[in-house]
View 1 (cartoon, rainbow, N blue to C red):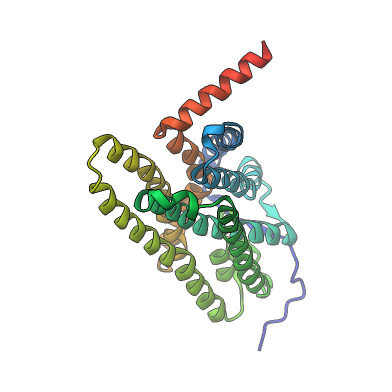
View 2: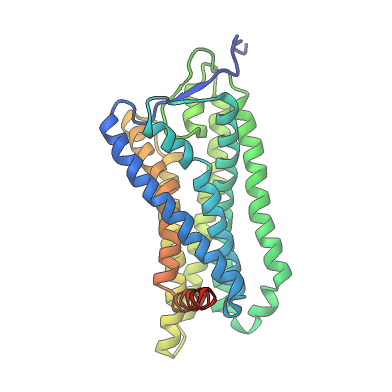
Length: 313
């Protein structure tokens, strides 16, 4: 029989690191700096991808999608983190928590699919270069981008709705820094077996299968690159692919640690820091990785800066 609550839509308290106020003060400053860098870095990537004719290619179209995604992803949770870490009031309303959960899960699931799409783009570019423009037609790129955003939204609607149907009763303290599915499931007073099975299936579909697909595509890419006789060609192919693999490692390495780790108190505490990493640090590093390791992007940023400076003069 389902548990009945008198106040099913009451406020939540995001516990986070409330037992370590000194850590919250440090995190407030660090997160604020990283958030500003995330907004600036990803905005620059979007601008150069849109404004520079040399970057009007599928690779940079998907990269600008990733940058937009990172801006939205961090903005869905970081402002609330700053409020919580910067003051004594840790309260978030039920509807605020629900909104954060829907958006957070939507964008997180979208990034899982988008990284697979970007790996597919690199696979076609390296393994089938003569057919690249035909296969990765602009219409196809739009469809793949729509697939990523759309599948993430569907996943969020299904899993978030199932999570929010759980009764929370008097237990309103979320032992996490954001309203995430694992923390809310743990908070409920009802039988959560269905939700846990659903989360496990979703984790396999959105984390394990995409990661296997990405690694398989890069296995084929490595074989193809090694057959290139030109050393310059090998370096260029490995350069763009290494950047994407580094982004994949940062994102999947931390997300899987949160959603696939065993349920222990130590794992839960570690999960808070992993959540901080993939919500705050990874979106900041993504534009730096693609900029510092990509000559085309660096040149495009310089051209954009030069045009901006000249127009102001």
